[in-house]
Amino acid sequence: MSGKTRVCYSCQRNGRLTCRRTRLGEPCLKTYPLEYEGLLRRARVTFQAGHTLKESFRVAQLEAVVQMLEEHESDFVDALGKDLHKPRFEAVVSELVLVKNEALYAINNLKKWMQPQHVERNLSTTLDECLMVSQPLGVVFIVGTWCSPVETCLVPLVGAIAAGNCALISPSECTAHTAELLHRLIPFYLDNECFHVILAGTRDFPEVVELKFDHVFFTGNRSEGTRIAQAAARTLTPVTLILGGKNPCYVDQDCDIATTAQRIAWARFHNAGQSLVAPFYILCHTTVTARLVQALKCCLTQFYGSDPRESSSYGRMVNLDIFNRTKNMLWRSGKVAVGGQVIEAEKYIAPTVLTEVTESDPIMQQDIFGPVLPVLTVNNVDEAIAFINKQEKPLCVYAYSSNSKVITRLMSETSSGSFCSNDSILQSLMVALPFGGVGASGMGSYHGRYSFDTFSHRKSCLLRSTRFECVTYLRYPPYEDRNLSLMTWASTLSQKSQGWCHIL
Image (cartoon, rainbow, N blue to C red; front, side):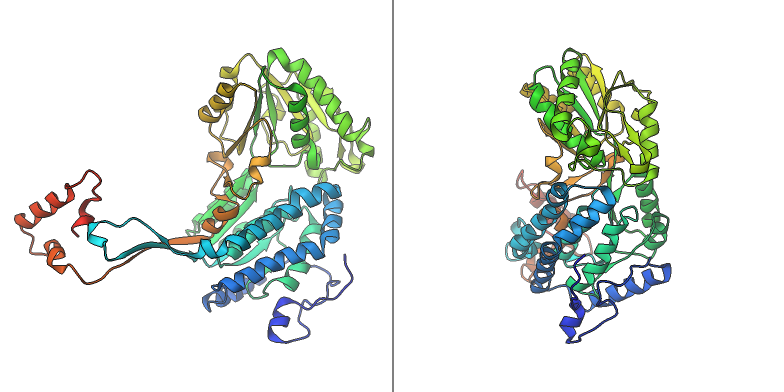
């Protein structure tokens, strides 16, 4: 961690030289329940004062996010290395760059997003204005996950800031070094009254949610997401849930096996397989299974050498609980074709490919957050589609084929949060595409404009004049058959009629 002292945002704004959290070297303590309510109250008072409404304020906060990541890149890399043994390359590309891209995209488009959107007018509103105005929701709660602890906290935060909200952010307790870094840095870059980082455990989340936020954004596993949704429902709080699931990957007989293997191996084994969006299992056409497994083996040697344990490009499991869960599933499922080595003292599991896997194996019954790739065989694309549709709806579906008809069928005949052909993960990183789940894999979406919309209320507004009362009087009592006939006639004048509103 950098040793420099930085005056926090609120102290700069108010001309003070010190505040309660000025020194970066202070120990980071867990946030206790009584503090949640106090932080929420502070944020709500600030929001109600209109502090976040101005475009200039939002842009300044977004620029501060970029500045924080640039000035403390080495600190974030160090924290991610301690938590996940994440290589510098992965930390920068899959975490920091993603957040900076989101922030810069929001800065460049914020003026346009904030403008009212005019909608089509009809005959009776020709002289009126029909528009939608995006207004911030208020104070939102953002819960990140340990798989990508920087990205899952800060990308939603970018959307919340752009939309004009205040926020409480809760990084995962599993990645303690990254959580503490965010807790220490954010007060020195973002407004201390609007944005707060809390260090809470997963058991605390329902209690925090019940304090009544204006929106809850959660990324993580299904069981925790369910508890948060239930807690939010008790206070009618809307939620966005980005949940894990078993993302299928179909490999067709008509595909470039070498390229397919490279892209799947990269997607499955980066961050030691700890990803919500990686391919979780392969449905491989039976005629190319042997070739694919051999190609995956060659890719892993090319990526990580003959002993991945010695590679500086390969990570470790985040904690012993997840290590043991992954190890137990690995040893009770299929046949190890590649890898399989485990070292508990290092939380190390080698990149592993399993063959002869059946649908009933433990590895196919639970979510896999580790470097294990099961390979199942199918005889054709029909079997693959049927298999996918038997399962709960996944966050992502992947398909590798040079046959466009096969790709079209997988895309149109399966349901998932997102779809990508002939590559993996990239669809979840693009700022111009919404990303989110469906069914069991979540609800709502984010990225770019979609993050802004998630954290906004789109208020419908009709700005009318008092003209044309000579027509609108027909709607008033006492009701007469003649008036009803005229209104019915007016509403059927055109096939494009918008109904009663023509005359009302």
